[in-house]
Figure 1: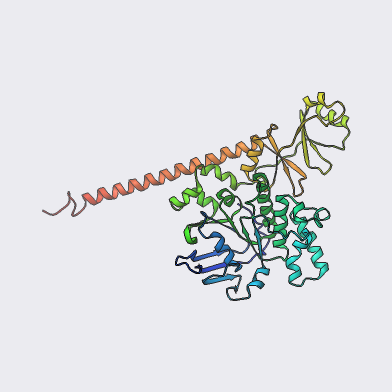
Figure 2: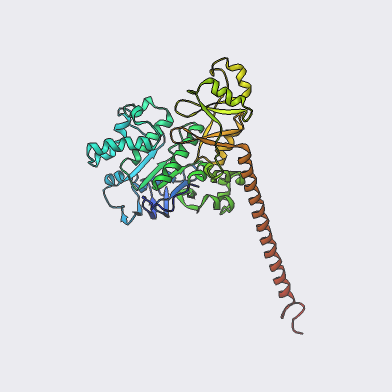
Length: 421
């Protein structure tokens, strides 16, 4: 679950949905019925539920892309149900699947769209575009003038988030924003969102059909039934350990204990330093490090200090004066906001037995190794075991009390043994 700093006041605004209902013309059955829900300022709330349950409709009513049939919407102290919907949408950031960027506009023009519409000065807009690109980890000099077709799917989604945040709205709505990208890119985009929220403290409402994604990014999760009826609205940990009913249990699925790996971040488990060298270092100095006997492996960084190759002592014989064929390329990295599950998957698919941890622009920070991860997994499983034992003891105590009460009732006045003659 994302963390927020206790010293920073939220820049988001609370959202209150009061008996919110949507009935489409020609239908007698509501698509959304009497939703009553509050999102705290600076909180990330995820709507998750089966297809067709109304989660996207509920989200779109918040910025009135879909007009509610009845009910109220309050953002902060303002009832926004009856104000100009266009003006409302300029105050609420919105990010969707496949980014929704305008293909005929450059990256800078896409990000500048809302600030320009609300009348920001040109100099302020220019500075804001650069600030937003830097915030989402894209080099302004490199991406400013590109068009969406010149970007990867992950880069487009980053620009989409930058555009949604450009006018500094207190509320950000996200409708399955990472659903159209590959799993590895999706993991990195989730980490990026967690990092951004750690810095910005916006109020985020996020729709997904992926419960693992909900666990990873949500402060609280609203599990929705048909017509957006709320089956359970609670923290990820509470839903994992105490689902409200069989419907929620079905969403949690098997392996709830392992799903808790999505609740712990890499930054919480001990990132350590590791022996490194860069491609600009003299070959002889790199070889000396490996020959010294103190280390039998090092991490080679590229010219931007990003992880490039794992070099082992045995690779020296294949170097032949160059590092081109020596070493094993780094296949996976994680950020400090990645989950233990992300890190464990990366370590298990990399022969090095560890994974490099990187910063916003991919720069090396440290490593997390298999031993550290497995120790944390063991601690988590032990906690689960102790909680299960405690729960069983409570059930046993309750059963013993009921049995004693039943026996006392049978033997007391009016019972078979204590009745009147």
